[in-house]
Length: 282
Length: 282
Image (cartoon, rainbow over all chains, first blue to last red; front, side, top):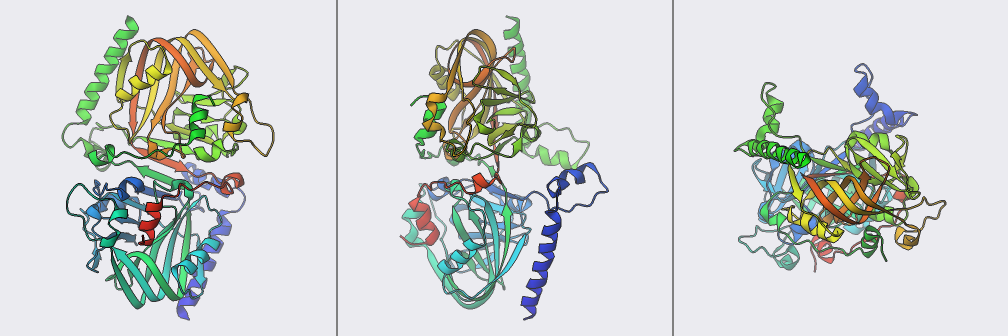
C-alpha cells in the first residue's frame, strides 16, 4: 500500500513537470537556458539512445567489440548489451552494469569488460503507471504497447514489481573463431527460472525501421532486487508491477572500428525503389 | 597548374596532421584536452552525421518535416536534404544551404524552409586526392570506392573540379495530399544538363546497414561555382577533379515528431533470426 501511494505521488510529480514543460513556448526552453544563465530550466535535456555496434553483425558472429563498460556508462545509466564473446547478458541500471552469465550468476560487470553491442540512455522517465497482474510475457507486452503512443519512436522502459514467475536465459561464452551465428546455437542457451521474486525489468521499445541495427519491438533484461539473478527475459507472470516510460527521440550510433566489423558482409535489403530514385530511372 | 600545386600542399598538410594524430596514444587526446586546459588539442573533434527523418518514410510520401534549414545548419555545414513537398533538392556546403528546383534555379534556401529528410556533418576532411579524368558517373564511383577503406563506415565526400558534362535532376513540388511515393512519380523529374562547368559535388558514402534509414552507397548533389545551378547528380564527365574525404564514425538520428511520420507504416524486414534469438526458441 505504501509503495502504491509512493507511485501515485511520483506520478503526480511527473505529470506536473510535464504540464509545465508543455506550456506554450516550452519547446524553446533549452535555448533560453543556454542564452540566459538566470533562466530556470523547465524542460529536461534532450533524450538520446547511445548505441555501439549493429545488431545484424552481432547476431551473425561479430562477438568482439572495443567499447569497455566504463565508457558505456559515460553514455548512459540505463540499458542493455552483450559482453564480449556473448558471455551472458549485460544490464545497465542506476548507473551500474551487471553481467548475468549462463552459470546463473549475476555480478557487477568489470569496468574493463568490452562489449560488441550495447545501448544505453540517461533515463529520465516522463510517465509512471501501475499495471494489473499479468499471466504471461505476451500479456505484459500487449499492455505496454497500449501505453506507447508513437510506434515510430523509441521508448526506454523500467518495470519494477513482484514476479510470481521469471524465466530468463543467457548464453555461455563462445570459445574460438570462426564464431557461429547465434541463431545456429540456440541449443546452447541456458534457461533460468525464479519463483516469487522481486526485481526489475530494464528494456526498450524500438521502431521497425531500426530493425537490423537494433531489435525492433520490446526487449527486456531482468535483475532481481538482491542483484544475484538476471538475464534476457523470455517468460514471466507478475502480481504487481509499475512501469516508468521515457520517450527517446534521438538515436546515436557509434560505428565499431574492429577488423571483424569492418569486414562483415551485411546483406542489403535491396530496396528497389530507393535505387530507382537514386538513379532517376525506372 | 597553380591549382594542382595548392592541392598537393593541402594534401601534405593533412597528411602531417594525420600522422601526428595517429601517434601512439593519439586516441586519448580528446580526453586529455578536456582534463587539462593547457594541453594541445592534436586530434579533431568526434565526427558525426546528424540526420533528421527516415529515407523509407520520405520516399513513400512523408514529404513534410518540422526541421527548418536554420536548425539544420546548427548541426553541420556540409550535407544533403530535401525541401518540404520535395520542391527541388537541398545542398549544404560551407555552412550555407542551397535549394535547386525543377525550374533550373538554384538559390540560398530560406532559413525558415522546413525539411522532411536531411543529413549534415561538420566537414573536416582527413584525406585529399587528385582524380584522373572520368567519362561517366559509374567510372567516378568505382574510383571513389577504391579510396574508402571501410565499407561499413560512413564517408563525407567533397569533389571539386571541371566537368565537361554534368547532368542533374530535381522534382517539382507536390501539391496536395495524399502524396504519391517518389518511385511512382519519376516521370515528373526534370533533368538539367550543363556543359563545361566548374563546380563541386557534395555527397556521402553510406553503409548497407543504414539502407532504408539513409541511402546506402554513393549519393551526390551538384553546385556550380557561380551558385546558379545544381541538383541531384545522375550523370557526368570530368577533366580534372579533386576529392576531399572524411570518415564519419557516429550516426545521430533525430526522429520526426510530425503526425504523418508517427502514423507511417514501415514495412518490417522480417529478420527471422532476430525474432528467434529474442524469444529464445527455434
